Image (cartoon, rainbow, N blue to C red; front, side, top):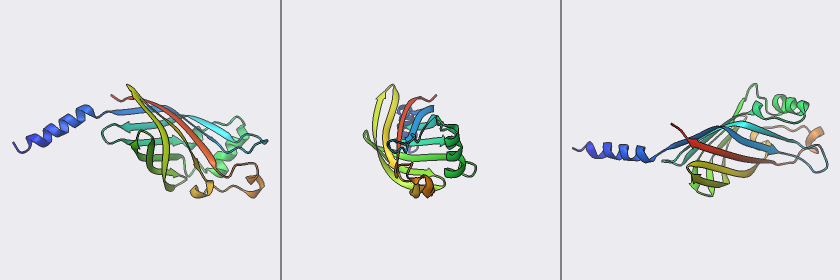
Length: 168
């Protein structure tokens, strides 16, 4: 009998808990300086998962999935700045603190930083999570040569929009 209560608790929480995911989330970044060639790219293959029981969220994106309009810019981004051969992915692991903010660990190029991100969170059958935040290249050991530093913003603006469906 003493085991019945924990078993019932596990069954009841698993009935109400649900996981949601996507494999085609939209992430884009921009590091443009006005009047120069735009420095921006988009990734339509971001993977995200959300657990409604724990409010945990995990995001995975492969850096090489970012697409630029200028092929040479994409090549330099992958080879020189992001070193995708050694650091192929970026991740975020965090918790939805309330419907307006997530907190967690962002890892880029092997460097992890704790961040807090304002979000728009909507749950209507599916879950929609979107927002914007900024990162600084130096925080993640992204070296910007002086020769191009005037062509790039000091901070990088990251926008994301993920529509997650219930996972079976």
